[in-house]
Length: 163
Length: 163
DNA sequence: GATAAATTTGTTATATTATAACATTACATT
DNA sequence: AATGTAATGTTATAATATAACAAATTTATC
Image (cartoon, rainbow over all chains, first blue to last red; front, side, top):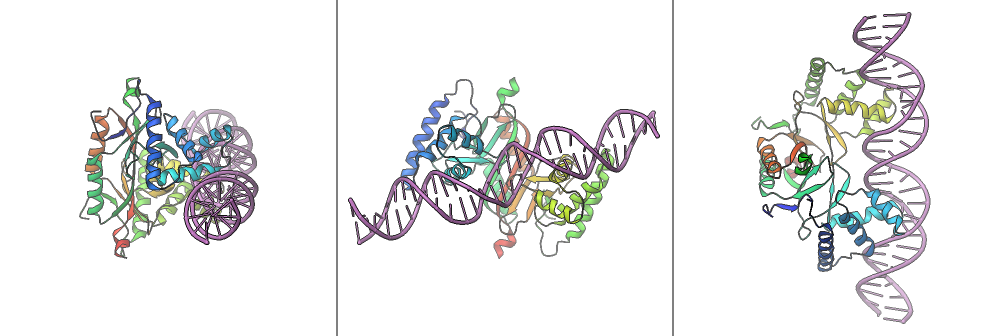
């Protein structure tokens, strides 16, 4: 990849999504082991369902899928799993969509930036040092202590512009 | 003000909020006239209520206030007014709070950046050219066409850090 | 292994945020 | 006044999320 600030690219024609799902699950298992937290079957399944989608997933869509599989049955089931996965840095919530995506770089907790295509719904996760720097510098200059960042760019991805 | 990229500052001890409410309302009236859209009593009142608060306002809080005044009575009343005000660039929605704030620079449609204090709830609106530039440049380098931006920094404002 | 403690999940109920659909009223133009 | 358009009212419901408490499971300790 030319640009190493891209944590999760847009999914082009030959993007092998099955592989990145497997990779994500492997990493999640390792992360949870090393942190001494439990990636239970339920939590694991929710993470799989999120990674299984090419686009951000809504909580109640997850709930429907779990119900189809006779796992979990009520909103708290899903929201607790989402809370766990968010807490462990395995997924992100997109505030402008009320939807969830797998984290492209779950090894470290971080803030990142999202490019959201309004046409195809696909999302790219990036963490650009220039963006982080300019935001931190600005906050600092105003005496503001940064605890978290929500950076979501809505627009059209290259593929959709090409038509 | 030292830094002219600040569209709406944090409200310090001697911030005369009544004056900025009046200024905002005056500007809103003028904007709507010049655009040929109607700032009806309801819409105007919603805008006043939003500006009347020092912190972001929730839709259902607005609804409660309107009910107290025997104006409007149901959610659509409020959401329609909010939609109008958003459309006209007179307010902004904070996606990470599901709440609304008056726009510090309603003369032009624009995207801006928000610093949200988790302690006092106060919000500053800025529009920093460096931030805009670095985000635009990054999007462009990925072939992404920007239509809108959600940039919300959560943290602690200077006052609250000082304690 | 039995027991106690802690964590996770189930369950029911409800809170919060937002929109759909259609009726009515107000305003603007003729 | 008649007509068309925009705004608001009204009822119902969709979509997102959490509270509170019970039951089951896992982990730690005896």
